[in-house]
Length: 311
Image (cartoon, rainbow, N blue to C red; front, top):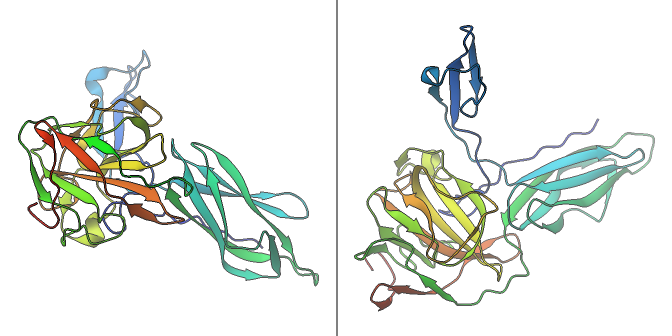
């Protein structure tokens, strides 16, 4: 008997947040056709038989989605562990044994691989170790956005909000939620819900989430449940724009955006006490996200970025 599992990994934004992947659809549409038959789907019907006036949205609780999928292929005398990348940007994965009996692997587990956007990779092969007993094992996969070979250079960004006046509620190293490695060099900009969010630097949209609607300070309830956009830049660094409003993502995964282009609308979703935009630049340091410092220019010139809250 062979067992394996694929846990959902939530890494990035706030401690254990930012998942890492698009979430399961948070809207289900119900409509009635011309014959009076009810139907359900994850998008508005485009068939001639549907009556648009009868379309209703059925609320469904969204959950963070996995950014990688583990597949086990029976290759006869061995099993192949393949991993698929769900994102439109690179990720690093690590496959390991949760438990094992009468099995060996090539290479030895844990084993890592870097996958290109929407790519797939054979990470390991598993064989019975003999003795006439079938292999019995359980696998797990972890995944982190970004290519670990990317350099971490300090570069220039523009203000990610379309407003002349702005206030930084929490700066670098802020004690409320910027004390972790992946968020140390983050900025929280106060912003009314619906404020246009701009790309602070050009790149490719690698990951989006827009289906969450709630906010609060219960970490178990709200970590990992914020709407966000993750953009990968040409040097491999990634910018994260978080706490966007429900349906506040105006770009799609795989789309290239230019500096200053509107990409979303600010909001108040996830682990947050008030409407704001959380902005951070991150790189993959080998199966872990790390925030890096950056320079930023606003309407009146370079920003003086201070640390702590109320910077």
